[in-house]
Image 1: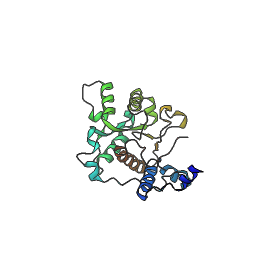
Image 2: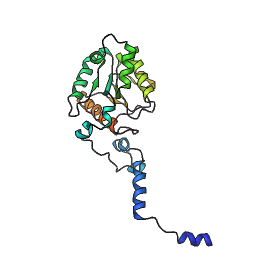
Image 3: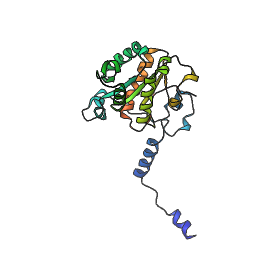
Image 4: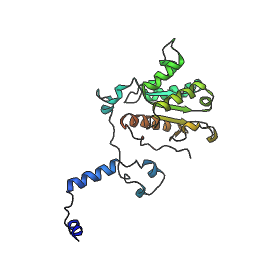
Length: 218
């Protein structure tokens, strides 16, 4: 009886504490952007109404931002056969207001340096890595090597490895990437924008998956 009376007279938490606890619960919940895009019920996630804060160009270019801890914003891993498409992608990213710094092997590799060294350095000195998965990529041993280096650099992904699939059958898709969301390149301009949005959020959402609508490999 004594403990029951004490429970009834236990003081309620202050409104400040309640507000703080509510905020912490919402911020620790996983993003529901994928669930919303697939038509899932909002009740499946506590963060259904939470939206990431918009990232301005001034935030990205701030001298103290985490962006400048790496030499490149994004490393493009691709087969030489797909160079023309990759050059279009690089031109698009570098022409954005954020002026993304892209590593393009045939343009930025140091002449006379070993291929293995250049591939490893490119992965380590970039915030994220776009893998252009095409039939030519799957046949290129150097592409597979760089893919494995990227996965080793960030085993839990965290949005840093960005697979972009083009003209590849499901049975041929790399098993190493099947746990990651990917962008399917059908309309080139739309896919370029998805890649750009992913790179932006990757740089400033440390420890969280980039909140963009991607296609999942099931």
